[in-house]
Length: 370
Ligand SMILES: *Cc1c(COP(=O)(O)O)cnc(C)c1O
Image (tube, rainbow, N blue to C red; front, side, top):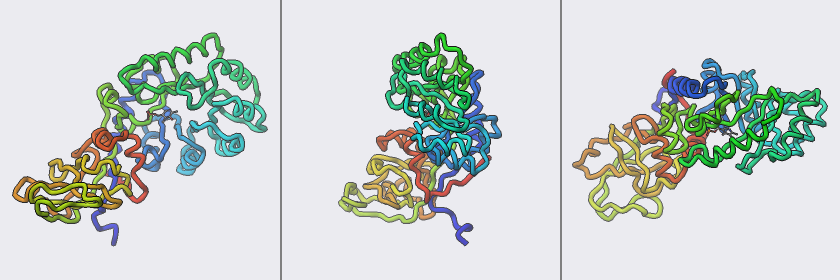
């Protein structure tokens, strides 16, 4: 019964767009292989939809944030290497071994725990070149890497760093970070895969990819530029489209208000369209009175506060173009035919990654193409 009804709010996935984006990344990355970053349930898109397409497109490794995410990938049939980006607490190491997960070594403590571990482990050593989030200091790294490489039960599969500003216009600090990594690697005799590039670097920094074994794209896979800069430097297609429906239409008199706090007041008789979408679906509340959505090909401003489950659109005067909008009409909140994720993120004071990874579990992900 429920299956036959039009869904109120849904996230539509275009998997052909995902294929297109993988192809674009591959072209830009040259000889480097793709470690597809699918943390946060593939940036909110749903790993069960995204991962099989990535595998079919020849992605040979995956990156996630933590062990439970990696175990979930194993549960849906991922046999490729999975690197967990977070620095493990030593007591988690048995889980890495049990599920054949690649371990990030990003502190001296973890290096010692790995050296003392009684079973084989594959590790990627992370160097802190200036982000100061995780990583061995460049001064300590060579000594620890050679100790790890010398241990019979440890395979040093990768050496990597992460850039703080690769999606910005000023790339000088990113270049300095790359230089610091190269300084550590100079004179080191290693077969480990070197990797640096996130989406920003893939778009803007060829030196982060040249003669490196791997790149680690996340956002670009999904057609999500993290900044205007990246959007200009690298064309992708959005994979996700967030759509809902108008559930009620009314005309309010001049001086009437809508929603909590009465933060929008009609300046003239105004049609209001109530839409089944709110912050509990993942729309930032900061879109109140700022964001826009598209109905019947025309953009309308959000009127008043975004509620938990609903928002109102200012459809204009009853005799204006919005006068034809009716309950049941589709509303494009994010994506093709509506505002881009970048536009919505800007209006909501956030970034595209936070926007899609914030789409909540009650919103069904539906594959519409591919
Ligand atoms: C999230 C993440 C990435 C992917 O970043 P994008 O900007 O989405 O490409 C790459 N590497 C690490 C360590 C990450 O945490």
